[in-house]
Length: 227
Length: 322
Image (cartoon, rainbow over all chains, first blue to last red; front, side, top):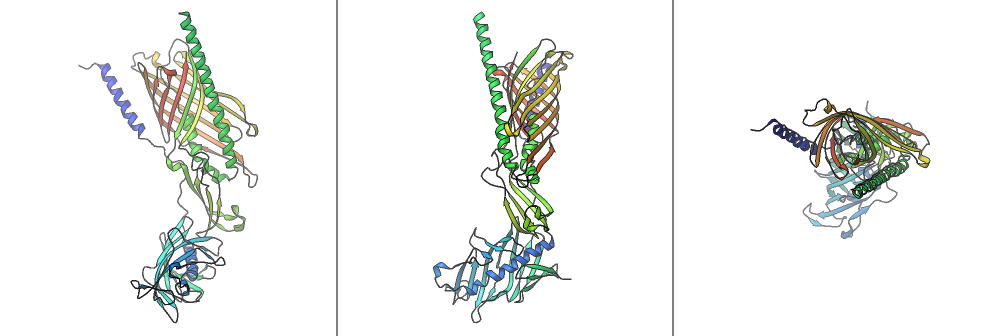
């Protein structure tokens, strides 16, 4: 028969073992702040949409303006005088996406993209900059030189701690055109989804919640509420 | 017999000198080196950044001070005992505490970049904490309408570690009616331009085993109060009330207990950018912790313990007792 002393020792040992296991499983709580970036307002996202829309007029016309005939060097680095910093790459073909690789001047299909880890940097009118990653495909029509972006074209937008995705619908860009001739871009940032519609002028409009809410000056990215 | 006593006395004398040397070495090195480099870094950032940057240090230091309070609950009721030694503690940080991200919303961006004076936006401060990556600088990014308009590099981590260390020389005297008084003390140390470093802590423990002789283990209650000043840069206070128990198993002693804690730390320095004096204080987050430890009844009573509260702190010590 187990005497009380041995019983107490066993209980103490079991308690110690349990306490040891409990302590061994402990990890310190976090004490340093880890806050998510401040929530954006709809106006903030409108500004981001405007910045993205302004960059489109600089980048996408390269689908029809690019003139290098060396097929091994199908890339274009934006000049220092541009608001854009970085390089875009091309794939030109005749006969559509599955067609024959071609030089840019005869291609009827084109793909413009940024390389992995080589986002474009776009100077925004506010004084800041955003990072852009493009992947667009387009049907190219010659005379006049136009490119109509196909479904699935789009990319990602990064503004510091904020990220967004954009996609194009029926967007048409023309040679020497400062602004997209027609079509739209849908810009999604968090819970906000906005559509920017182009008409060939420097003024585009942002539709939010099915209401035309802002106009955008594509020259400087400023927005004006539509009353 | 006489030669044995002489040898023992010499050995204890050597141990005494060694322990004192160790305590002096650890204690003088840590605040001088740490505060020197820390102040150099903090002087480059404002208060908001400094609070987040130092947060793991601010909150881990109190648990450090409030650990290693005892390694036995046995306190004689008759027969004077005294001893001294050194305690070493380290709070193990959550890996996430090696970095931080802090927002300041709806602020005049001109406070951070004069080009944006009058523009109201958000500022995101992020980067390594004091105990984060020493090769990477933090950043302060200003956002106007969701667009980053300026980005400033700040400071890297000071030491890349998850352990926040502290060492403390300690001495005790007790054995009268189950009472034991303990002090942690280091003489004032002049640190040049940073001023004087002072460390003092005191506490009292009482064991009721003298009036409850049938208890199968030793029990004890106590408190400890500490203050540490590191020049003009840091001042910390920590207080703990605890109840502990211990049980001897020949060469080994197992001990543990529960404690209620409080602590605070204040930091002061001069911000280089505008010459302003920055000063802030925070209260510790840890209000209680559990202790479990083992101590050897030989090898200078080497003890190792774990303290689990909001933060996990490990402690060890060597005590030479008489």
